[in-house]
Image 1 (cartoon, rainbow, N blue to C red):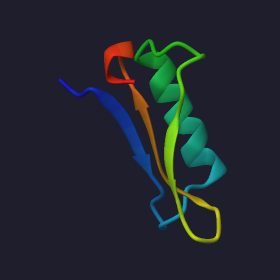
Image 2 (cartoon, rainbow, N blue to C red):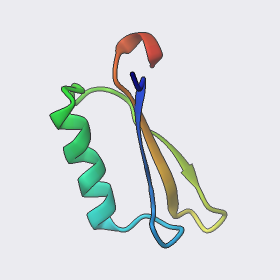
Image 3 (cartoon, rainbow, N blue to C red):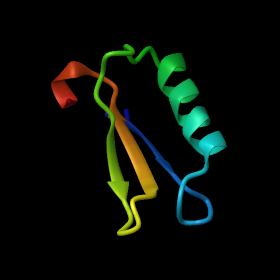
Image 4 (cartoon, helix red, strand yellow):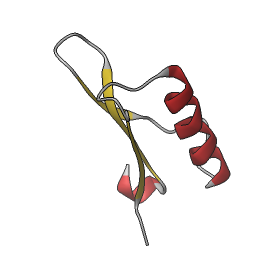
Length: 59
């Protein structure tokens, strides 16, 4: 069973639509809204990947 939800940008950097889908997936999985999101960003500051733990134990 996965311990986190991970999303990546299809064209290297994430778009707003991809980020919105990530948030929707996390909410459907029951992740509370106050859970911290981790991200990998490019040197230009754009989001490449986003991650969120499914449980507090993995936070």
